[in-house]
Image 1: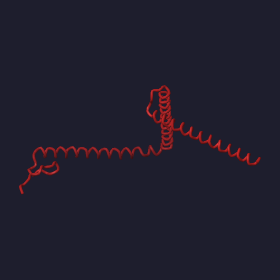
Image 2 (image 1 turned 90 degrees about the horizontal axis):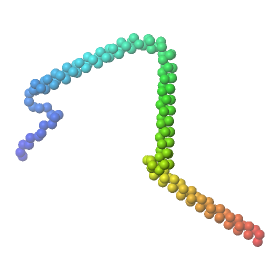
Image 3 (image 1 turned 120 degrees about the vertical axis):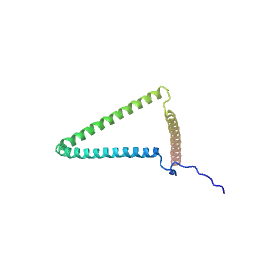
Image 4 (image 1 turned 135 degrees about the vertical axis):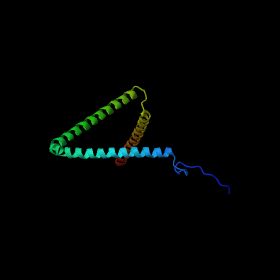
Length: 149
């Protein structure tokens, strides 16, 4: 069986000596990684110091800050809710206007289909009620004829 050479994938290490390009890549990655590690350590240290300094202030002012935060949250959520309802009302009004003026907005086909089905069902119910009324009337007439005879 002849020997086939397989293509090297990018995940397989090459069999040669490390080149200077690989060494430079490794040194650059190591330098960047070390710099980021130092920066993350400084960030953590600054955060801990800020918390140590700010904790007494937050504890002393929390009876004011917590209700204020709740009020701000409620006012903001109420504003967004009312804005959303207003926008929905405007969009519905615009859709109805387009439907009434015959501009065929999205969903008009479904509405027309549903209206046709409801009208058809109402007509069927009317016919059934009419038949039931006639049946009851016939039975009343039959029972009155049998009582008089």
